[in-house]
Amino acid sequence: MPEERAIRRLQPADRPSLLAILQKVNNFDPQEVDVAMELIDIAISSPLQTDYNIFVLERNNEVTGYHCTGQRPLTDGTYDLYWIVVDPDRAGKGSGSLLLRHAEHFVQEQKGRWLLAETSSRDLYQKTRDFYLHNNYALIAEIPDFYSVGDSLCIYGKRITI
Image (tube, rainbow, N blue to C red):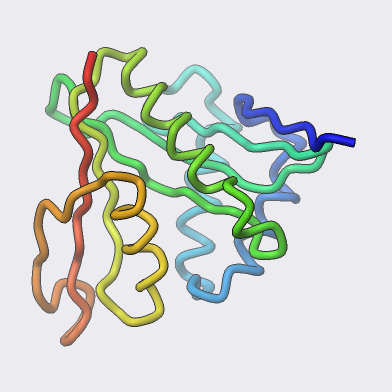
């Protein structure tokens, strides 16, 4: 039986599933989980806001990941991929790439030109950096010692064709 996958807008009932997924990701410390949940809570409490557009991935009616994408302030076509997260128990099955393509399509629908993603240079994030490169993102900039000494900010980007 083929697996059913669908991407849809965030609903309030998704909150517990997203929290559970975030807490399972080994890369995220409690502070990072808090920041991710803050954006989820903003999107739930203010559904008409457009700063944080959250879309969830469902596989067989179970939430298995999400992305949060929004227009970068003071730009007319640059978007940030604030979060892209897949349940570690479901990783390696194309869900991350599916969510990323959805984010790109969302930016294209908004007439955006760029989608940027920021991550850490720590070894813990090597798979994340490889993921962006594998999906045709380029390393646009690296700021040494950004998060802490020895932990650089890596900014990946992809030009979106309108």
